Amino acid sequence: SGQWNRKKWVGAELQGKTLGIIGYGRIGQQVARRARAFDMKIVAYDPFLSDDVVRRAEAEPMELDDMLAVADVVTLHVPLTDETRNILDAERLPKMKEGSLLINCARGGTVDEETLYGLLESGHIAGAGLDVFAKEPPDDYRLAQHPRVVATPHLGAQTQEAQVRISTQTARMVVAALGGSLEVSAVNLPFRPAGSGGTPWLRLAEKLGRLASSLADGELNRVEVLFHGVEDNLHVPVSVAAIKGALTRSMGEGVNYVNAESIAVGRGVETRRVIAEGQTGYPNQLQVRLVTEERTVTAAGTLFEDGDGRVVALDDYRLEFRPKGSLLVVRNEDVPGVVGQLGTVLGDAQINIAEIHLARGRKDEDRHALAVVRLDDGPESSVLDRVRALPAVISADPVDLGDA
View (cartoon, helix red, strand yellow):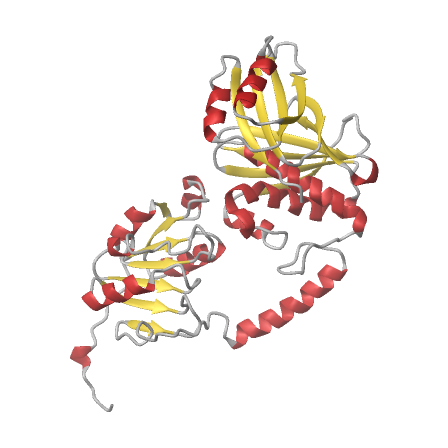
């Protein structure tokens, strides 16, 4: 307008301010790296990362409400899932520090826009930078046009450099996919890198990863995939399948063959592929080993005739069953009567036992046993409590492997 009104435009420095990052994966950590260049203090909330991983990535871990109370700037870097939809809702948004700023360049639908509008009107939130909206383009432009809002129409990747990178990466991904690799950023799946013969191994690896994660306690630190006699060209895709299975329990359908490895890296989960030596009793065998803060769990499997996948060992217990359906894995003292007591509890709950597989510990000093019970219906928490209350039962874990 041709005015030189310097007194009207007084800004605020980033130096010394606290940046709160919701979602401390790969992108969130890159944002933190740039913010540290302005001497900002970084605090982060990510329910899928352990505190140690967050600290190693040079941020202070905090619970979400605590972070909102201290952050001068809050920025979101999460996908839109059932867990993140309206993660900043009518209850949480008012907990933001008075006079703070909100940045959302992640996904629309993660912020309650009506509540945000009201807090901007009152001045409780001093300003917002929004690149994404619940509906794009919006039907209602009140929020985008608010004087305290800087709005852009979902331009996150609209740079000349980004468009060149996308084109180059697309070409490289096509070449990699045609070469049978799963180490690409995007590809249409299901993907069969070595023809239909590789698909049963991928399915088995994913089930083993999912099974092991259901039995593991604590934050996941490492996924190891050990190959005994499995073809070399399958090592990469089978490893990805195992990682996908291991992460699915916490991430749900948000993890897939395309993003499994990058999600693991972003969450500080170490991954290893190992060509194992020694005899296993089978010409080809796959082991998936998960290491958490609490324990290590190993699930081993092989393929029988016509690609029929079987679990052949859990930790030190040798047994054989198909990895599918609703399972109950019970570890107990090796004493008489446990199977009968277990059957009584399930029968009283009208839960039918389809199969039961039993194993004893292989070491002489191991006085424990394992039962894997396939059920027609998954047990409710009250039934699990009754099973766990049996005198000889050490642990009882439900596992849902589905049939896909």
